[in-house]
Length: 420
Image (cartoon, rainbow, N blue to C red; front, side, top):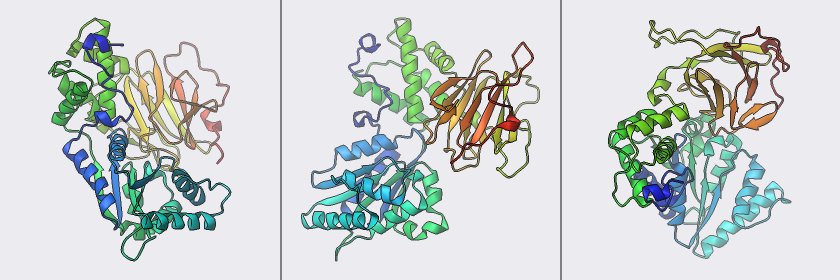
């Protein structure tokens, strides 16, 4: 690797949530202070939200590392559970084996454990990451757990962390009792341009740069333009740019290295994701996508292919693909919005070049499937059908030289929605 060339002792831009590399921006420091307050104040929940890659998990790992020994912690990361399975998972974190227990026994065991810890002078903390995936029924169980108390204080402290849709869920009328117990709520936004540059230098310093300038100063504005200040994206781009510099045996990352990395990753500027197309809801008739009103009328870009989005055997929308990136997800800030609970906020993306088209999973909950196999990254061929939640995306390659024949897995009019 490039460590010897850059005189570093660790990889500075790994994607793993290493607390050693945490960059405490003002907002990260504030979020961490809110989390720390749960240990001392027992009245209510603390809710921390942030976009994918904003640094929530690294923040949690740092917080956990600094906890005092008298704090007993349960950390839940798997949140697509029914109420009983969720409560059993909490007990497992506390050292029990509850899988043969029925729900009343699970609740009794939890209550007894919490009381025992209180009598022993121990504080008990429950951290639920990816909490946006919790069902309303499970969140109601969380609220009930928060009601376990002694004469003076609550026996369980709770932190909910998740993506921004967690706020939408908490604000629903069905969860008004839970929302009333939220004491502190904070949202981690992306880094500013200045913070992005400081973030890069911080990680390099932790990795052993000793103040040496590794990224040329003129690269910082470009990094911000292509990452939007999202830490995970910054890590990916910077690591790829360092590999480009390593390839030419240079210990400094230049603007040319950065351009090479951007081409290799097939990225477009982060701001270009503001041009949006919304898919009609499931009950609307098929409709073709209209050109974006933001597209300059004079630009004539040769299309590479098309995608057809279908559900329940009906085509919902057709979208032409030109070189660039098309992000697909549940919320309106995507290039292609699919309004379905089976679709993650940012579910997947299609990266189109003049000679290739690739679909990539964006760490979605339910994943993407080709021929019933879950894939992370897949080179699309003419006629391929990708299952995304309960929708199907068919790719049609307009560059095909021969007349297109009927694909083996069916035309869009015969796409079947998966069961369950």
